[in-house]
Length: 179
Ligand SMILES: O=C(O)CCC(=O)C(=O)O
Ligand SMILES: [Fe+2]
Image: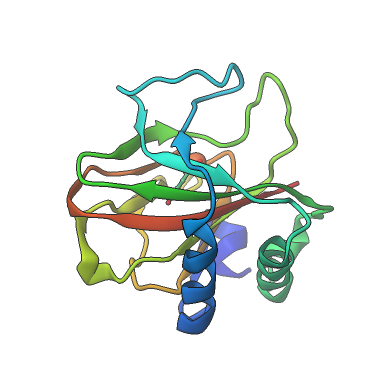
């Protein structure tokens, strides 16, 4: 069994080239960002989540790219995945964070099975802002994902995860959900 199958978590360094990161970040300049919302009810809850987000088209180049990364990662595809259910650029400025949560809403069954996060910021551009994931049982350990730009972090959408407080600078990420 590979790492993802066992723990529900895997990462791929250098999944996105620096050139693609630049292209994506240039595109972001023309998007309208608004406060990220929480849960199925889509509420603003600044004590749980503070960051701004912009959504991309679920059929865009970037979601197709992300699907390709998941397909290439043996083990993740053991979970049959049909499509991208959402794709979001997030910006965490100093003081921003996203507290512990799961992406799969068990009650409302929105079908999210796998989450993929790409680190879009140079790790030296910020302090804090760690993406942390609680591994699947029986591992249960909390790991901090690598923050190197271009890393794709993949985890089961049912796993608890968070982005710790950004103490300095700003962090940008791309998140895609597949089901
Ligand atoms: O920005 C990140 O690294 C994670 C974002 C996230 O967990 C979410 O939007 O559900
Ligand atoms: Fe999340």
